[in-house]
Structures are given as structure tokens and as C-alpha cells.
Length: 323
Image (cartoon, rainbow, N blue to C red; front, side, top):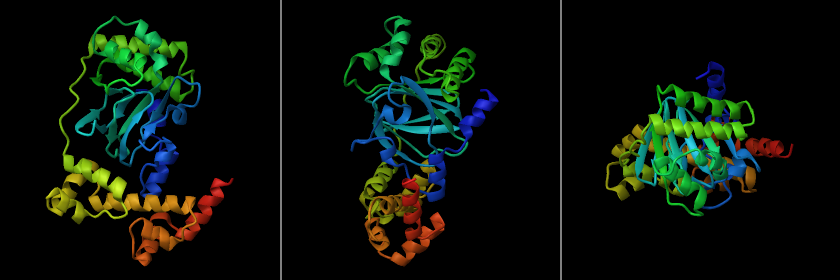
């Protein structure tokens, strides 16, 4: 891939800087307004646009969600691990391309700095031109047919390995380039490029198996931390799983790069920061709300993570919000 383009894709985004500085987690309100966590296209590409590209957010677990659009994830470097439907793990490596329709629920394990993924965000109507270029039958045409014609399509995903296939790589790069440099990313030219990409995939690639079952304990641990952070503990979770706590922590670390307790602490302090910004709760009440009865520890650890006291954080965050 073009060197200048890769440098743009490797840049740390504002959201990633926040994750690195706070040790927090994904803020759902940036992506969705509903309780089921459906990522909304209008929050990512704006009203009226049909297609755009965004880099995948690294450094945090992305909880289980679906989209109201079609997503194509392409891995430019490293690897990114998805969990499809709550049970199947798919490790995407450099050159892999994953198609997800509107009903496909998935979650994503934390990616490192060298793991560069690109999300091609596509409203279904963008595919009309591409669909007209394809013959009936086959996995890709069936995928597009379901995306375009059903209000609540069945969950569908397709994975292709495109590494080393120059015609496919060039077309993907063209789509990414158009979006990153705002060269009419949802124009007729990009629609034709998408159609050519699908034809090249049909010619050169076969859909890959979706993957094997992931360790259910790790998935349950991530969801447990996400939903029950205020009362969660490694020991309680391990007892419920009937596994030693050390074994659970090793399994979580193997899959995510962080221990159970590290993930729990990040989730708690991310919620604490959110409460300080959005409520009038005292710092002591915030500490209790996220699971810390020792307020001295909460204040000390908060200062270590954020470089300031909870009161200072609230003042600065609120001043920034009113600018």
C-alpha cells in the first residue's frame, strides 16, 4: 500500500489518544443511541453520504454490536480478532477482508498500535451499481441480495484472503484513498470500483471458513466486566466458571494482552470519568458507583491515570464541553 496512505492510517486518532491517556473503554454514545448498541451510519459518515472509510479504533475491547449499514473490514497490517455471533472467532491478518451485513452481531478484541484495520462503511443502496454488474448465484451475489432486499436480513458474513492478489489490492487501496483524501468517496466512480472489486473477488478468491469457537470463558469475562464493573471481581467470576482465578486471568491475558484486573480497572475509571463529566455526583459517590469503597485509593489511582484530581478533571472536562 502507498506509503503516504499508510502513514495516514497509522496516525493515533483523538479517540485513541483518549483511550491511551485514560486507560478507559469504548464510549457507546459515540456510536449509538440505542440500548442494544447498534452502530449508526449517521454518526460515522454523516447524513446523505453512501460510503466512507474509518480506521478501526485500537487499544480497547469493542463490545458486542451490530450496524445499520454493511461493513467491510480490511486489515492493512498486523491482525484483528472478531467474535461473530458470540461464539466464533475470526482472526483477520494482513490482506484479509471481512464482509458483515446489517444483522451480524460481533465484538472485537483489543488491537495494538501495529494492528491497522480499515472499516469501509457502506449504506446498502451504494451496492446497487455493484449488484447490477454481477451474475446471479454465488456467495457474494447472495450476500448483496440480502443486504439490499430484506428489512431484517439473517446474519451473514464473508471472509476473503486477498494478500498478494494485486488486482484486488489495488481496488481496495483506491476505495480507501478516495475516502481518506475525500476524493468523492461515494461517487459513481467509487461505486464502479466497488463493483470491480466484487468481480475480482469472485474471480480470484473463495470465501474462507468463519473460524472456530473461541474460549467461552474469555468472552463471558469481557461481557461481565462491561456490564457488572461496579461489583465484578476476578474471584467471583472464576467461582462462577468453576475455574481457578489464575487460570482465568491467564486466558484473558492470552486473548486480550491484559489481565482480568487490568481490564476491570480500565472499565471502572472510564465510567468514573464519564460520571464526573455528566453528573453532579461527588467524587466519593462516583468512587462508590464504580466499585471503590476506599476513596483514598480511588483519588490516588485517578490522579495516576489522569494526571489530576477528580475535581480538576470535572472542571476541565466541563469547560472544554462549553467551548
